[in-house]
Image (tube, rainbow, N blue to C red; front, side, top):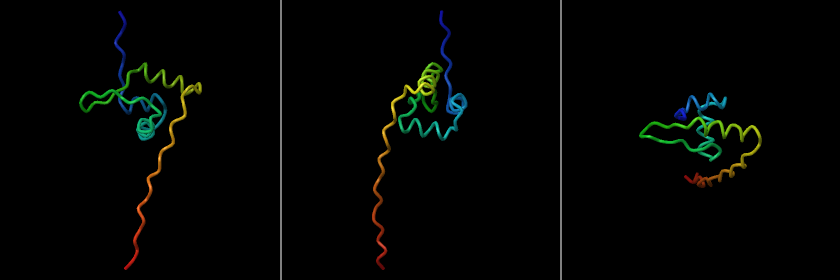
Amino acid sequence: MAEPQRMYGWKETARILEISVRTLEGWVEEGRFPKPHKNGKTVRWFSDEILEWQFKFKNGLLPEPEPKKRQKKAPVNDAK
């Protein structure tokens, strides 16, 4: 019988990947890292997902993320 997979939160996942939590948040938002599984307010990744992504990352097997689209700034009206 297989053991159940361990699940990791933001801090643990960032530590495994040797990055900051903010970087991890950015990667998830940009689609560079898999989205977490949510259970209420709890957010977790399965250990296999982290290890698979880490292997692909280290071996250059991940596709390049789509560039962010910049939002146009509204013109400033300085008329007085």
